Length: 313
Length: 100
Image 1 (tube, each protein chain N blue to C red):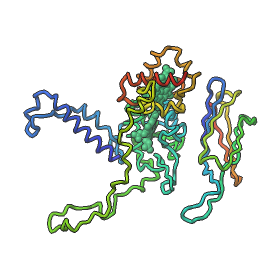
Image 2: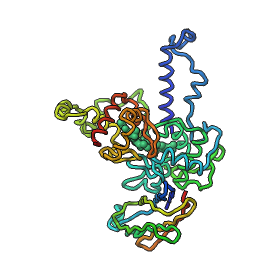
Image 3: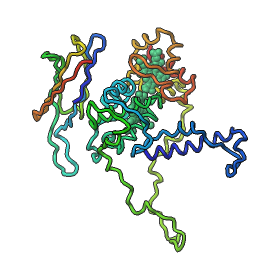
Image 4: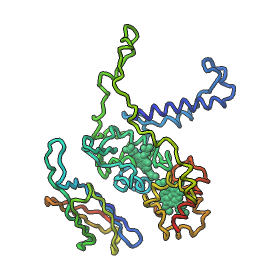
């Protein structure tokens, strides 16, 4: 995952720069540092340096089996990605789609599209489960990776994935990626005897291709005035909660189902709001903290819950 | 075909993903301009022992790789269920799974 490595490097630089603002004078006199910043500690670097590369570089010691992975996957991943990796609702599909890359509607999954198993390992530890990234241990990550490979029929049921045998896993689309060989991607800057700029004609632009009308905020106030009730709660709900709660995706109690909500409200509104803010794992599935949108304030979430309850009475 | 069978209280909950193209026979291959022959599951049957606990008649309108979920009473952990599909070309596949 070259791209993510690049992104990660950028974060590293920014983080170091930001810390520099608060650094003590200890390194301030270092030549070449403009009096800013300090050298990242080994611990800090180790915390960031978790990428795993296609050649296996960066894989920690450890192992995990398909059968252990099955239990972990069903508890922590299936509510979104589906029991068979088929994807619940509109959550990403993780398995299947072999041979569809040249179809009208290709299905790009780990098995059909991803060139390296290392990306699966890296991404799972780095970013999943969606609501609790970097919560999996090394062995759990090996086990879940093995299981997702198994769902894609790339390894057998009794397979145990380890650091040592990692590179034996071959991904079907490994050869599907290549360096862009079109001549115009290797444009070198012209430094002398260059073309006269006046002779260069623009033959097309992308102006007018992307619709932009929706970016203009018109009528927002009007509709707010026209619609009485919990407008703020509704807006938050539509933006951050409806994906799951509109249709009961991933076990979420459906908004508008009076019976379910009457039951849910037995412990009291306050308890229910608290669970929506902090998140929890219940009988039916995982309610991520603030629905996974951590930019919401507690008040936003409270308003959304009130809206949901109003719609379910 | 993949099956998951699990006891939830006194019911066995079965989830099945049948791998099948579910071609309607009405679609044209864009490159050759020829009709892609029909190939779709006609029948899906689940047995617990020799008792049929689920039976579905499918047709052309069911999407690719059908996903089916149902539950039934009267099963125990450790027993097995078997699932069979048969398609319009009389191809048939049976898979068994333990109830967990």
